[in-house]
Amino acid sequence: MKRIYVIIVALMISFVATSCFEDYSEQHFFRTLTVEFEDAVSRNNAPGVNYPLLPELRNNAGNRQFRINLFGGLHNQELIIPVRVVAESTTAVEGVHYTLPNGLNVRIPANEAFGFLNINIPELQNTTAVRLVFELETTEIVNASNNKKRIGMNIRR
Image (cartoon, rainbow, N blue to C red; front, side, top):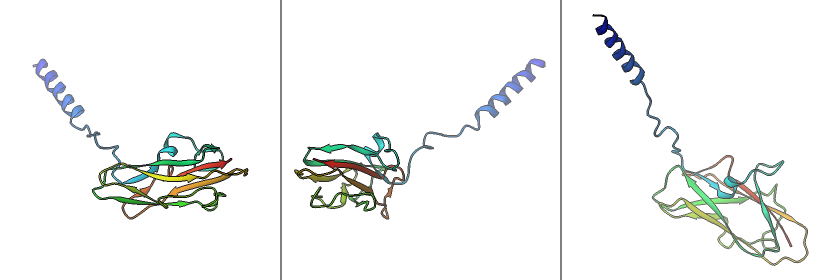
């Protein structure tokens, strides 16, 4: 008789201990479409600012690409992500220190997770360092990541 009680108690404990496990398989998935700069993810913020400063583009005239990541899922239509030059942090002048061949909109093709911001740095004559800071903007469909939406760079000859 005592053995039956022990078996019953053991079964009750096993039912109580295993019946309330939560399914964690999807708990940490992002469901909101969000964009971020790849360079902001892979680098730490510079001291005193809320964005990373990329390695100085010194004597490196030419085209540059900055990857924008989309996470939280894919979208079945092409996404246009607006980018702005942060005027209060930027000393570079468009047309003098840089140009934007595709403008300030980044295109992320349908069902893809990446887009690219293209800039061109012309051959500069002796000039002091200037700073250029970009920021991704939120749209109706896509949010800009709070911590990874800005990148900055210093440009000099």
